[in-house]
Amino acid sequence: MMEMQFADFVTCGFNQIVNNLAKIHWRWSQSADVVVRMPTGGGVGAGPFHSQSIEAWFFHVPGLKIAYPSTPYDAKGLLRMAVEDPNPVLFFEHKALYRSLSGLVPEEDYTIEFGKGRIVREGTDATIVTYGMGVKWAETVLDDHPEWSVELIDLRTLVPWDQKMVSESVSKTGKALVLHEATMTGGIGGEISAVIHENCWHSLDAPVVRTASLDTPVPFASNLEREFMANCRLDADLETLINR
Figure (tube, rainbow, N blue to C red):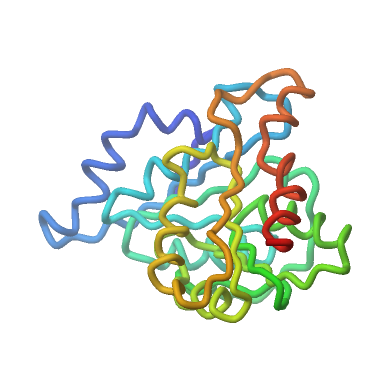
């Protein structure tokens, strides 16, 4: 197990991850028992070289797995699963959650299976699909709008991700919003949106909405960073979707 002090610094080891670790099994039938911890995300005033959300860089690379917990309980269970998994795992940890979130974590050993999301809240009006800090953002908005019945899904892992849970939820609610902190263009939300449209076409009452950060580097100034972040637009995007 190794740690990038900031996920942004992973570029210095990019070749080793995407061209070596990701392909060892296919080239030599060897496992690659490596976990790379990736402190990630903005909202802490650290600027463009320490605050990027870069999970989509690796989402496209076969052979890598990606975990992204949103709670202390999931962080332990997913990290233990990452250690047990013979594949290379990129383990994203949101820096702002380090400082703001606490929770009970069992002392006994346990693992959480990759590719199994969790339904944080049940609902019937729409589905929010997200992960990491996005889960906290969504909970805040839903707490502010008790009149909305929204199902909230925490993916927990991005490779693999729980297509079955997402498809079942969207088929029930008829509407979906995909939320992530990473910038919009080329983000993971595009792939999730495509799968939803392919699998749930006959159940959709509106196009899938993507809510993401702006296509710019992360600003240093706190007021600009707030406008950059995806949660700045979440309330309005979700209201528009529900009222369609």
